[in-house]
Length: 430
Image 1 (cartoon, rainbow, N blue to C red):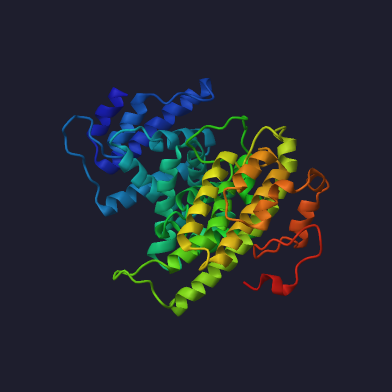
Image 2 (image 1 turned 30 degrees about the vertical axis):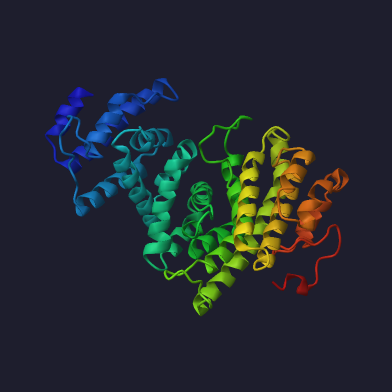
């Protein structure tokens, strides 16, 4: 590697970056012939940090900075490299060498360039880059995944109106990336504050993706060799927990947003017309999303059984439901039940439905006693109060599934007692 470094030092920044990719391509192609998973040692990573991320090797030296045009050219070089390399194994190891966090000063440059590279890949539909990014999201700590998600949301949902259409179109190009992206944004936007409510364009895109192909949110789970114990601190195998959190907390979070004090300490007396329209649109989208999540949960029993993981792997973790219940409690107290009774009722209904269906399908592993104890912490609601009393016979005979499919669990998130006929149109008047 030292010989390569000396030859690269004589080149300008862009040609050195292109040359280092060429040398490492040869190096890893050779390594892969003798070992299916070669270890990426320090040498290649240091070359990439010095000649791609412009982090000087000498201590105390000032980092070089590419101007905007040079950075764009570098991104084009990288996009073209991944597009032209036909061996997926080589692409994956080069991508990993470039962008796996090392816990050093190069990580900020690494993450900044990664965000721009994936954003460019979305814009020009470079599928190999999106596939590499999907793998990166699966094996990288969640703190870095949400940074990439934020960069893409800023580029396509916030900065330029209408650009979300470009992001929306990658569903057919790389469903695996879309699945990992959804998991990342649900980790990012946890509705804990007004700033962390997902933008309407993002919400609409994700709901439309899932309506178009509900199995989308199971792609990583269905295509990954799985152990019963999953690593802590990484993205979950599916975005189900995050999507349940969105549906449950959304009525309360949006109500809180309406009550946010103005700069003078007062609360706005009226909601602007355009904001009211956005709130109604969001409400409908969350209703559609909630029904889709319940339907996907119903699919899971067959898939878990097929993988011999039924009763062994929980895709909706009980440990993640506990903080969700605490958050719902806190929001309900903050809003004052007298002023937000409908929103609290809707949140509790959705939570009850999600817990019931997840437990019935094997996605949530816990005892009914655990569930009763959990729900006893919530404000009183007949559905959460009775959740532990849904009989095992009802679960085993599929009555719960029929309720979701037939509409007894209506798409607006209000639970109708099941089994039984679908609710009348007036039942969803809110």
